[in-house]
Length: 197
Image: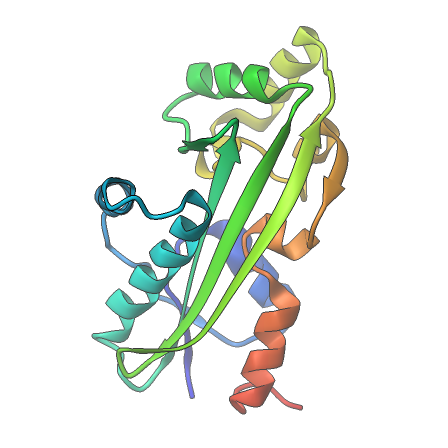
């Protein structure tokens, strides 16, 4: 069975490729902002939104690829009781990182497998991250070195790169923080007979 990643996420692609999982990419075209706003209006618990977005991505791609196993994933950041969205530019990124500095936030991840337009597996994972009290000069240097690439990450950091220097404590699965909880996914893919046992 073919595996399709319903995401344009560079991080998810890298994790799957490094693990030797064969897949193709067909990025979902759902409007995440509209769907997120709808879920918030429906009073969906903030911790459940990543899973709902992952479901929607997997199902949207599965509709036109019924014979494939479609993987949808999403991640949300909760800080101070608020759902934080991706930053549109480096000015917003600087403001967000200054707010997160010295404090704890939560990443909620959702992963969904769909086949023949039906959800066949779901997984949710939460990580807690504490940013250190970094200096303004470090923040400026970090933003200069990382450039606009951080705008694709909800917290404006990539743990697999320079972003790890923003933190002094992390609890949770490393792969989940990258956006793809790999070990539970591999276990399910073995169960489905898609990767060798």
